[in-house]
Length: 116
Image (cartoon, rainbow, N blue to C red):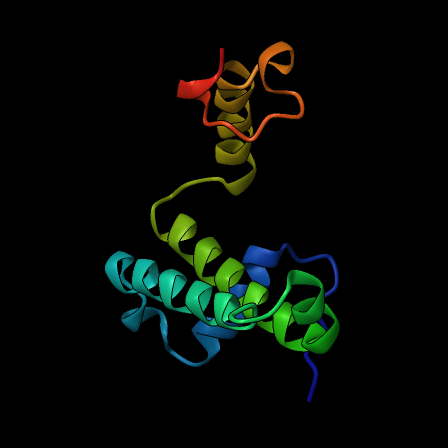
């Protein structure tokens, strides 16, 4: 049965799902961080021994599911830490803007510490 979740944020939907099952008790920061890594490894496994295009073509639904798992755990960890997802992303983008000025980084793959 699908629950109507109109006008709710992703975080609200995640918390509603978790709280209905009384799983918050299991979702401490350490275990959420571990879960992010584990789900990211499952995402990576879909690409193992394949060209990127092959993995995308062969496993589009699995890619969506594994990416969603990573994001859900990221959202839950941010929520546990009292962090606003939009704010921390904006803050990181501002840092990246400083670290990777267009004049030095455009078309380059080097880490900011290696940019000329």
